[in-house]
Length: 218
Ligand code: GRF
Image (cartoon, rainbow, N blue to C red; front, side):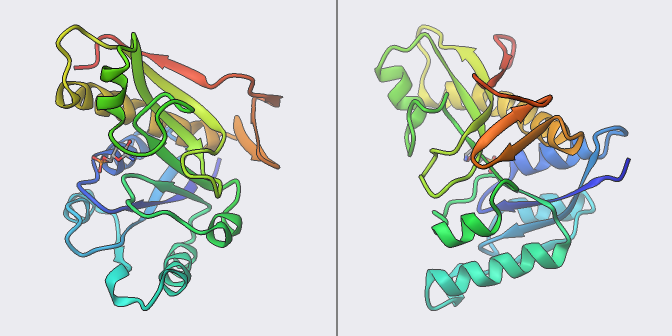
């Protein structure tokens, strides 16, 4: 089976990118990371990607006059890489409806909450403040609605007494590093697809997100 070419787009340290790349390098993953693209030269993930042997590109957002020009360059960088799947991983920009439409059904994001709960920022603090029993992360297809696209997989963990945003962040990250590569492999195998805004898993519409549960993740 041919390996699905994936581009990972980052703004920051890129720990999810690294997990996606490392999992791709395990035989049988079904996908390969053909490019890591950052919107700023200072993204720590660029050096990590280079160390892992993945070609990198920078589309420096500050050098473009407006969002449309930046997005045109970003789309060109993705298409030049040959990627058929795009994984946003800590990419700190909101993408326009035009961009999302261009990559519809091929654009993923990871968000640190059990969507649809806690779209936006400060998700760990909000889950703790609400005294939720569980929290986690979601891998979802990207639509024009911020953090609103159909969810493919939840990584779910139990909140503990005394948890802080930092303690929760570490455990959520550990789960993210499991679920994001897992979803990439499921898509590469053709087991997960998105058609007209609906996620299908093994040919059936996905009624509730796939679930990875962990209380062991440190
Ligand atoms: C992750 O928590 C992810 O859910 C959010 O941004 C963070 C990226 O972390 N979208 P990293 O750069 O992959 O370490």
